[in-house]
Length: 454
Ligand SMILES: Cc1cc2nc3c(=O)[nH]c(=O)nc-3n(C[C@H](O)[C@H](O)[C@H](O)COP(=O)(O)OP(=O)(O)OC[C@H]3O[C@@H](n4cnc5c(N)ncnc54)[C@H](O)[C@@H]3O)c2cc1C
Picture (cartoon, rainbow, N blue to C red):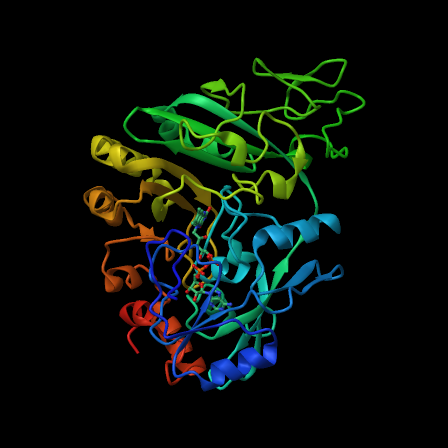
């Protein structure tokens, strides 16, 4: 029976689907296949994972996770999802610096497409990768690392599955930390655009949700608590014994902090920008939807992996039927991008569940959409009616592409493949790397061929 992606908008054309149980079995599958693609958790909306030949799922392989405390890394089996890795790390006292909105996505698939969360100093998830193990076209095993292969490694992490089947990724980790998440409602969109640096600098991770038409936004702020107070253990929300407030808040005797008029319990204080009004109950990014599936809000401190994603791992996420597109722009284009999309708010809003604006720190990964530049991303969760969405999506792209937008590899776009690859200064080098590692084009598909002709 044909299989589909998570959203159901792609039915994979694969002649055969494999789910090997061992590395050796995977190597035999790859060696025997004329053309083969790996499938992660299938959360992409584009045809990036598709093939008419062999598709291989890695979630049947042993779910290995090995922490190297001396190197501050964890080596994880490629088929694992972020939720599984995060839970394991947290139990051992470690953390990842960043997560996407959804913890259900696979590590390998997310890194292959440049998936990101939000934060002025948060790079895309792939930037945490320091080493990869891949199965090459002959079924051979190869290792690449940032340390030993500096010339090619930055080309091999965000690679759209075109260099081989990744079987293990080694990720940077750090000591576990706590996060408190708060939401500001009814923020004027002009304020977000005009005070962009202040808004996005107000927390470790910041997201703005809007429909572009109403002129209002919801701003989600994820505060990393060891940055806003003095490091006292916080899981469960213990107030600081001495009531100290960091960042200029006024401390009260019981450890509660008054900061800019907002009273924040649990011994930590919001600082800097705090526009609109504080949400007094939990919210979902899509207006009107139940917040039950969302991570804890209202400033309650808790572990990093239960706050950095917007959605809880135990719930099926999202707005049900949806399509997505997203654009990575130079950060300095944020004001123009806001203006451009607000102008077409009346066209966009009727086919939109919600739009999200995030920031991503630039990196050196050749095909990362944040390559070489600090970035603002404009994301659109559309209703699942492609015909109705297309005019709005085309209008969005007509306005954002001239501002230097690079479309998300895993989401929908109407941009021509060559127009997209022209946005990447290392595209030709990536093409050469793909030909070196995979001379016969075993790991290519139509999506990759159109972007980087053999
Ligand atoms: C509800 C929802 C929320 C999302 N939130 C975010 C978000 O917050 N930020 C963001 O940037 N994106 C987001 N996305 C997009 C998503 O992160 C990307 O599409 C990502 O690629 C999904 O990972 P996956 O494992 O499902 O990959 P898949 O869609 O299965 O595959 C993507 C690519 O990875 C390749 N690949 C997978 N496994 C391997 C492997 N082992 N070896 C080699 N190549 C491999 C595939 O061949 C394919 O090219 C979201 C998507 C959904 C549906």
